[in-house]
Length: 293
Length: 341
Image (cartoon, each protein chain N blue to C red):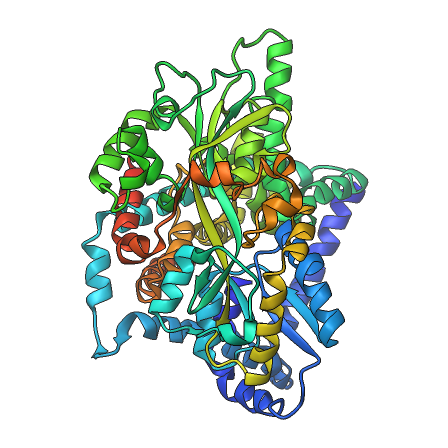
């Protein structure tokens, strides 16, 4: 009962908060310092990067993009990046959604502990976390030793140095980005809606799929999109847990910038990656408008 | 680090140039150096910076890591904040071709006797490192690259570098090319050889810490590794036979203040002093450039170092110039090869 009262209180609080944000605000000036910082340190360099891919010594050129399209290796790396990111996003959603749902149902004390566990990865360096998976999942790691000790397997199972290893590592790093927004949304759902559905005779299965789940879909989609976009730029995790076999754009960009060095080509690749991300984002925004209409 | 340098780039050129011009007249109290960090950086600090600061009263602040992209961004922005920049040999060749470096003033450096190949117009080779074959003590020991790449007679997983620069040479020698004729590389033949072993490769490594760890964890039985990572591991073995030595360089970025460059030349002098190099060997098992180092350290103790007379004779040298010209084409082949793994 207390948990339910909490939920209601938070729902109201949130509704009130949103009204404040949505209302016309006199102090938009406060946004400017951050905005200027972003423009100077992020947007302008991004534009310069784009320029690098389009303007050479002889003025405007599309040569770098042509070369990109004519190099099957680079296209292959892009395709692999999209595929690995998609897999990581799907696994994240499949693991993250039930987790967020489960946390919502806990009493406040346990909820706090569970959320802290989800947040923990944020406080540990990505490199440490990645190497931790080697300790856990390697040939001489915890899991394999347990399996061998228990007589489940004779030879160690290779979890790592493949796409499986990369997916596990990326899911671990990205999970909070999906679980936290979903948790917030689920907490906000008015408990009276599900109660009403039950009182009208719906089974708990129907209540979940026809009332609860649809209310969480926008957040699920938005946070999955966020996870996907973050996945596209992953570098350390695929390099270490993929055993160098899982091609990602980040690793290719590193060699194009720091080893070869072909900054124009790197800029062209980065631009293509950006365009893909923006296209997905706009498709999502469109989808959102349709679903509301 | 990399991302930040990239971001700072052009928008602050003007601001940085204004700030920079103020320091022309003042005698610098501190100069900056970009180097590779870790134990190597520590050895530079203890062996070379300490005596330099004792003589001149000028401090040196170190900063890591040292990717070529950082040098390019620094020189391109016009705000050359570092007087010395460490580069690997392929990066040195690239930096020279891109015009990112100032010539060294060898008369001002006034070096003590060093190996001839460590002396370049644009850089001083200060650290010799070797790429070698390594294996677990309980695995059948390979004697040649032909053995190393023979997965039937020497069964077990491999860890190979995720850098064609430090791999294709060995594949060719393993296929029967003699080490002194390996450059120019027969790229097609090298990739054909790699095709025959790729199923046995469990990791293509990026970081030098990976191969010794993978060997110790029994994740692989054979690996190509930097020698310095293997030397002190009691359960691992390696050989300098048919290994490849390479040189790390200290360079001066183009456009550095003359006063800072003059100080950098004084620091480079310290880098050629064999007694200083002995101190560096106590921190990291890499050789300095002095011809007298072996005599000073003692042949027995020096036997595990890349430039011990016997080790240097049994190795071949990396050809950075070949990679500068062919690096990009090879890298496309490399990406293609890896996509089909």
